[in-house]
Amino acid sequence: MKKDFTFQPSFKFSGLDVIPVAIWGATVFVTWLFMHAADHYLEMTPEALGRYFQLRWILIGHITAGGGALITGVLQFWNKLRTQSRRVHRLVGFVYLLAVLMSSFCALILASTTSYEVGWAYAFTLQIWAGVWITSTAIAYYSVIRKNFKMHEEWMIRSYIITVAFLVSGFALKIPSVERLGSLADVGPAFFWAGWAVPLFIFEIIRAAKRLRP
Image (cartoon, rainbow, N blue to C red; front, side, top):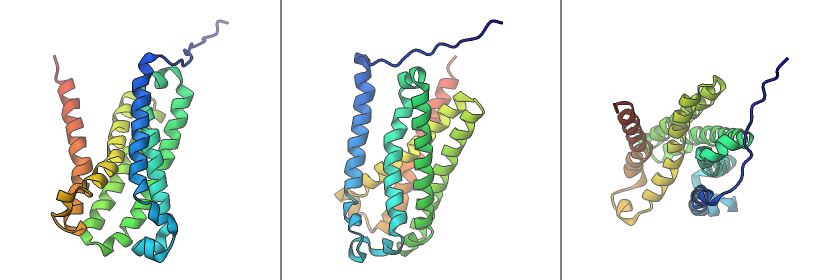
């Protein structure tokens, strides 16, 4: 009986790998900058945590897992890693899935409790955002289980766009000109929606343009 052996090339670094490694390093650095702004929460005091004190571990879980999702998610788009080291790709993908589930679940708890102290629109926006994050990641995972790799790739892109949106919105709200527009309750919801909805819309335009090519 003839056995069918599939050959999978071993992963070896080359000069071209400097680009994806640099992108990953930049992602780690930007994530560190973003999370560094939340260092005061680690004091675990009512003064430092404010309205989050009763749910401090939920907050820490959200921030920590969110950082893990940012760092691991970008590795999923490294083509060479995906094709030449599938085990590592799957492992990193599973870690990303767990990080998103933990961070988004914690976000839903916070959005349904402490966020209402800021305002109804603020809380509702965060609830929708977390729900879309969970859904897009779940579809990406289900697609790969069904071995629909094209759909898996598309929904992973959507999932990571939503992940990165937390960085974009967070940094945007700290710009002095944005802070002068109004309070967090007034300005936050608009930037939260724009942070993930606009990039997703651009992605869909690009995707449609590719399909319409002759």
